Each structure stands twice: as structure tokens, then as C-alpha cells.
Length: 82
Image (cartoon, rainbow, N blue to C red; front, side):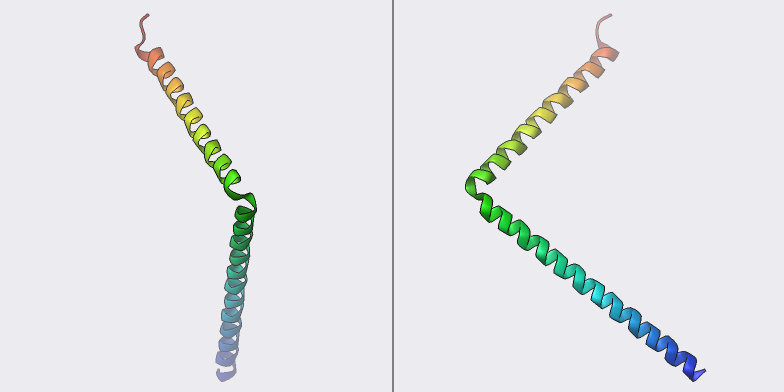
């Protein structure tokens, strides 16, 4: 019985050690990913940031206009003059 409990305790310790190692590796990978993103942002500079913002704005405007057009056509089909 004592040997079985000892084995269970050792297995639990090993499981905990593996979980800690996994968390440490994930945190390290996350730090590396953030550092890479920071480096890319620094390399891109102001012009790159401006272009990205303009791109986002244009995408937003286009999708909004497309949504309005689709909505109008749907309501027009249901409530339009016949």
C-alpha cells in the first residue's frame, strides 16, 4: 500500500513537472512572438503604420457599403413595388 502511494505521488510530481515545463515553454514562445511583432513594427515605421490604418479604413468602408447594398436589395425584394 505504501509503495503504491509512493508511486502515485511520484507520478503526480512528474505530471506537475511536465505541466510547469509546458507552461514555461508556452510563455517563452509568447514572449518570442511579441518580440518578433515589436521588431516588425519598428522596421515598418510610420509609413507602414499609416498604410495599415488606411487599409483598415478602406476595408471597413467597403464592407459597410456592401452590407448596405445587400440589405437594400433584400428589403427591396420584400417591400418593393410590384
